[in-house]
Length: 303
Image (cartoon, one colour):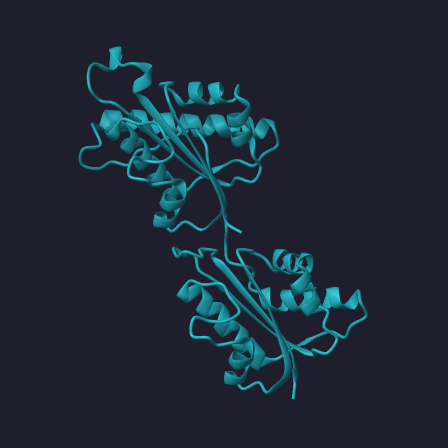
């Protein structure tokens, strides 16, 4: 399931454009960005956490947020127009499991900023979190006046960290079946076998949920699992369906079903003999449901 968190931290990265400032300013901003990221990864290495990689969409997002804070004179993860971390990630079409953001003002260098945050428990915990893999750092400064007399409060920072999500391994269908059958075997139930028609029905429903932005057993047109199976050419005597959204692996998906009483009961039904599995990964998922991963498992007994 997608999760996000907004707090307060750092940022850096400048991309040249009209009005971005002189080339000298851009080089200085880039150096600050590199310095902050290097310092973060220095502390992460000390604590056994993997290094973070700068991700282009997150970097642009953080940069634009830092510039917006300078332009509109505010310090917050939410803009005066109501833009939040969640809406920015959606607009950037960035697929993620969870993400967090911090903003700050002060500290003219990235090293000073990160060192200061490492003395604060909440910021330290965010920097050292082992779940993060990618980062976007944005830096912006007020350009008015002489740089030599510029206040420390003229330096604005944004840090966005994220655990990205990716398409499931290409063996997702066979792995779902293996895990379901392994669970059934614990209760001495016969294994299910894949059926091509049930696969088509399950795949169609996963595709439809992703395309039409919903998560339900009944489609917006009122079509049920039995009707989907019949449309795929499967004549059934009994049929059951498990759905999942947000899980990015067969392991997580089946484990979630096992923990859910209703889904668990369906997988342990002694009357079903065949199965069909569908999965759709929507990397640019920008809808209300916005789970990126959509799973469907049909279990049935043919007539």
